[in-house]
Image (spheres, rainbow, N blue to C red):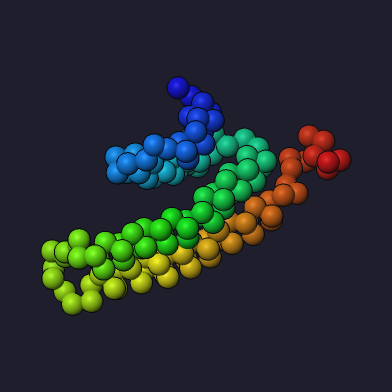
Length: 139
């Protein structure tokens, strides 16, 4: 299956069914996709058009802007499970769960939103880029 075919099929997964294995696999796909992008863009690897940079920045901004919801949902699950007494901590540190949940529910979304904003700004800065002499100046 090509990367384009995989990307086209991923939206089908939003409807479920969802379980722990699927959730973990989706996170793994996300991490490996970023790794693959790192390799694909390694000094001039496969980039040939400024429009590609524009589109990649837009997709990355979208991903970053979706992270706050995910982080909040993970924090809410941890909070509910902890409140119900269904979680324990290997380190048995007082307040450890509250610290983890605060970082996940407050810090992670804030930094993800900052990343999303920075990527949005970078995308907008590349919107007018073109290769001179290839007709881009007329667009």
